Image 1 (tube, helix red, strand yellow):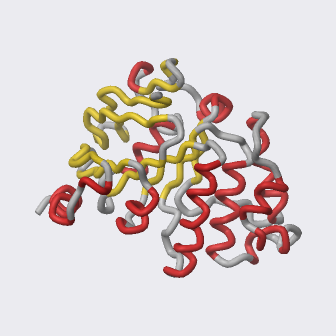
Image 2 (tube, one colour):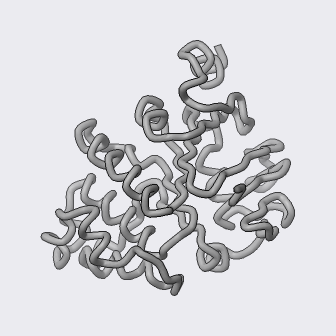
Image 3 (tube, helix red, strand yellow):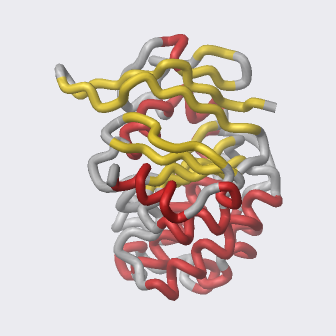
Length: 232
C-alpha cells in the first residue's frame, strides 16, 4: 500500500531550481534510502515533504490526501517526522526534556519514554544530563528518539551517520530494523551507501536534483550505483 507519493515534484530556493520532476513512492512498512553525492538535493527532498520548502499542493500525496504546501506543524501532526541533519537538539535541556518535545504532535502510538529507553538504554542512564554534554552518537540517539516520540507513520532521517565514528554508525543502524518492526515506515537520506543499502527495501539515487536510479539493493550492481551516484 502506497503511504506517500510525489508526483512531478519541483522545488526551488528563490529562482534556483533544486528538484526536477521527482516521481517517488513509499509503501507502508518499508525502509527506503535516498543516496547521492553532496549537492544532489537529497535533503531538499525531505524538506519539501516536511513543508519546510513550499511545493505544489498536488505534488505530495500522503494517505490519499494532497499535502503539498501545508505547514510543517500540520504535516507533523498528520504523522510525518523529520530527524534533521545536525540533530538540532536544545543544548540547555536534558535528554528527557529533549525527548518530550517530540510529544507535541499529540499522536498516540507505541513510542513513549519507556520504549525509547529500551531502544537506546544509554539514554536512560543519561536522561537528566544536558544534551550538550553527550557524545555525537548519543545526541543522534536523542534526535531519533525525539522523532519517534511523535509516533510518526513515516520517520525521515537526514544523514544520521554524518560526523560519527564507523562503530557508532553501525550501532545506530542496528536499531533501524527494530524501529521498522514496530510498524514505523522509514525514509532515509544517507551518503554512506553500504549502510543505506544494508537496511533498505528500495533505494533511489539522486543526481543534481533528479532521480538517476531506482531499485531494490539486491538487483543493483556496483557499476550501476557508481554511474547513478557520480555520473561516470
